[in-house]
Amino acid sequence: MQPAHYLKLMDLGHLARIPQCRDDEHGELLTLLLDHAASPEAAPLAAAVAKGCLGHNHLWQDLGLPDRQALSCLMQEHFPRLFARNTGNMRWKKFFYLQLCEQAEIRACRAPSCGVCAHQDECFGDEAGQPLRSLGTASQAAAL
Ligand code: SF4
Image (tube, rainbow, N blue to C red; front, side):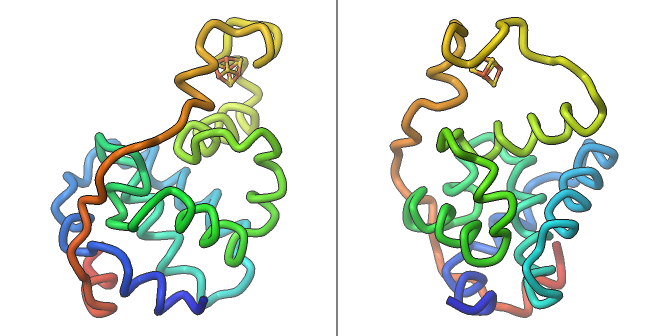
């Protein structure tokens, strides 16, 4: 689907209401996504996903998407290099933060590998939940 179609699926009003805090972190997430965007047209999706990471629900919920699969499809289509790197189907928000740690050469995880880590459920567990969705408009993307 085109970026505009994903933006229509999102609840951009909800995203705009997420407090714009943690500016450094938000900027790094946005840069990560923009650096891996398949095209310039994916920039509004990068902005939405980076803002959604500041929310407290599952990322797909804070984006207003109908389910996690929609977020995975968005990543596969518009950020394919990041999608390909998430070989273990890690939760997307966790995966983005892990990328930032690896870029900074910070070893944030205490376990030597995910396979022996006590926090596997937090990183790879399912992200079941109810959608928070109401329809947004592409013009609201400019407010993010
Ligand atoms: S499962 Fe453990 S080792 Fe793997 S990313 Fe999560 S915290 Fe780090």
